[in-house]
Image (cartoon, rainbow, N blue to C red; front, side, top):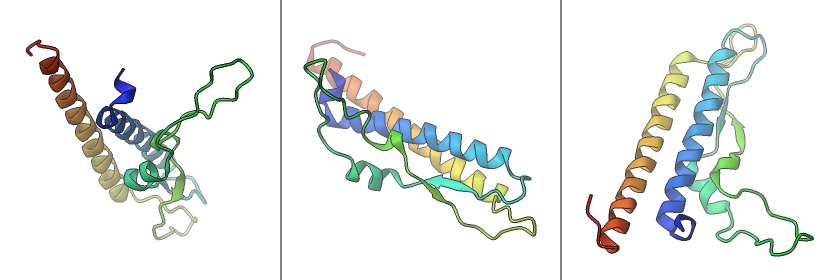
Amino acid sequence: MFGQIDSMRMARELGAHAALRQRVIAANVANADTPGYRAQDLRGFAQTYRDSPAIGLRTTRPDHVSAGDWGSAQGARIDAGGEPAPNGNTVSIEDELVRAAEARREFDLSLSVFQSGMIMLRTAIGRRG
């Protein structure tokens, strides 16, 4: 039901993007001392969401091939750049903290949009709260 409402779908995808981005950030921090490790990040949510198809393929028969998940959850990883240390590592803890705060803000926004959508749906069917 919620998959048919675009704002709810976008909120779900934004939350999935934020969660995946947190995983990438955690991997960067975990490899902060690994020689030669290049910090990674995800493409921005807006660009990823815009590039994704609006309608997924439907599989109505067992012979059909599904298109898989669409949207930001797939998240194309990119090189986060940064000045390399003498050992070739490009992870900066300060940059990772900023990225983690951005991912948290994205997740909070997705949660707010989803909660607002739920309130509107409850109001539309005549329930309160």
